[in-house]
Amino acid sequence: MSAVTNETHAHAIVGASALLRGLEEIAWPEFLRPHIEVLLLWITWAVDHIDLEYMEYLLWLFLPVIVIFVLPILLVIFIYGSIIFLHIYGLRNRIREAYHTSYWDGARVAIASFWDAIGHVWHGYEVNGIENVPENGPALFIYYHGCLPLDVYYLISKITLVKRRSLHCVGDKFIFKIPGWGVLCKLFSVTPGTVEDCTANLNDGHLLCIAPGGVREALFSDPHLYDIMWGKRLGFARVVLNSKTPVIPMFTENCRDAFRTPEWGRTFLRWLYEKTKLPLCPIYGGFPVKMITHLGKPMTFDYDTASPLQIRKAIKIEVRALIREHQRLPGSIIRGILQRFWGKHQKDHEEMELLTRTTQSDDGLLSDRSSRRVSGGANGYRRTPPRAEVETEQDEPEEEDPQKLDYDDNEIPGGLPIAGSERI
Image (cartoon, rainbow, N blue to C red; front, side):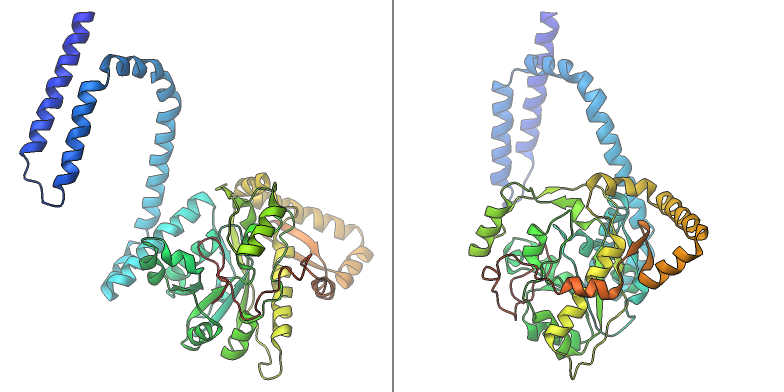
């Protein structure tokens, strides 16, 4: 046995030596030579110092673990990789058409196809109300900010592929300082801007999305309540007034359950953020919850007489109404995952229960119709407060300490990559 092992070790050394000679004989380009020399040094060190017999022992020791766990995981990865490839391949004509128009358009559609496939596979992503997105002309999307704005990435991809339009976004300034992100932000029209920049963007006929809650809402909104944290910000309302653009309220189911921030230390991290404006809050998750983006009907205003405060209040009411109608509270990661599989059946079951209840008592049906409206969302039919009741609740102050949140009304936060810009 020892003779066989020694012979195997000798063959390995001979093979490594041949590999080294082969690499040395290749005429490498000048810029690669330093890296090749480092690689050769690493191979030489490995041959001289690594005990191949011990490595062989470890291989045989952990072989059952590799067979039982690692190989199935690799198999699942390959299967889902194939699904993503097929999803992108199904859009090949759209990609080919975009490349004929422009190389940048082709790259945009190709990347959008990839993210659309990720959303389809991992979150079962859907868009409800995409018909509310105009075929041409400007529109301003105002949305509730999840912990990470994956829903915005998915919506950008969906609008690129379905509507063949580009959805511009407002992002935090620091993302443009990350190496390599500048090109991606330029490709998908992510910009840090002022009120004037956003107004000009809409006046040019583009689609634009803004999350008024920004970093604060992304990191510190309660995942059990999905509370809106817009504070005193009025910059986005001034953009609406200046551009006279219709507003599309937007909310994504389970957007706070895909990624979350820990509850421990939240008070201190909130205090630290208010003092430094640094988003020093850990994030965990990546849970495959069901995500459905709901786009409300376009909102228009009397732009000559309405004030920014009135516009903010009206938009906030509509976003809150979308949350009440479509999000089951308290938020739950497990329920969000199960909705991938039983959401439709649960909706049918609840609809039958509702019909059974209402047919048993005509008086009860009339009472329900007069006092409340019955709304059917992706989670099933449920009773939601009438608009007047919702509006009353909006008047209550959100923030515990107004002195902490005394930020500039002209600031408009965006939503990429983790949260909004403190200024646009």
